[in-house]
Amino acid sequence: MKIAPSMLACDYTRMGEELRRVARESDYIHLDVMDGRFVPNISFGPGIIRALRPLTDKPFDVHLMIESPRKYIKDMAQAGADLITFHLEAESYVEQTLKQIRDLGLMAGLSIKPGTPIEEVFPYLPLLDLVLIMTVEPGFGGQTFMEDMLDKVRVLREEQALRGIAPLIQLDGGVNEENVKLAAQAGADICVAGTSVFRASNPGEMIRRLQWC
Ligand code: DX5
Ligand code: ZN
Image: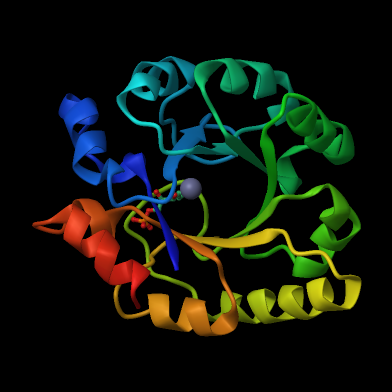
């Protein structure tokens, strides 16, 4: 399993050090951008992402939980994103936005909230490098993993096999040592982990444990 620690759960007074604590073991660095409109919480934006960029070579996985994400793609690219994921529910111009991300030479991801059926991403599969299936309601760290979302992973895997295309499948929300095995069995490629990594006494060691689930 590839693991992307979420900086949302780190100690913001020492964000640079927190990133250095996890960078070596991480497969991606997950950065949650929230606008207080699409989700009821506000986090950070491109300024913070740009400030963290020089500290590691690991790919920056930017998860946009904002309305009209297309307006911010360029800013996120300039700040140093390698992968930009936005929510299907937040954008009327999904296809154009995915193309814009790819035209900038970045990986494009599409995310769905727990209430959105997985079939809604099917029309966009040829344009996707990654599908992010939320396993909590987006907006906050520290929530409980919704095990029933694993059905979406299985359905998406089958659809991908039928079509012969395979965007990465990422899960985000409540991932820990207990449920990461279930995620792997269902066919997920990448798990985001915030609380379980940053609340561990040794975050690097926790990432390794999640990777070898
Ligand atoms: C939630 C965010 C997640 C969050 C995960 O809306 O998208 O990335 O940081 O945190 P944990 O692992 O604590 O659920
Ligand atoms: Zn996230």
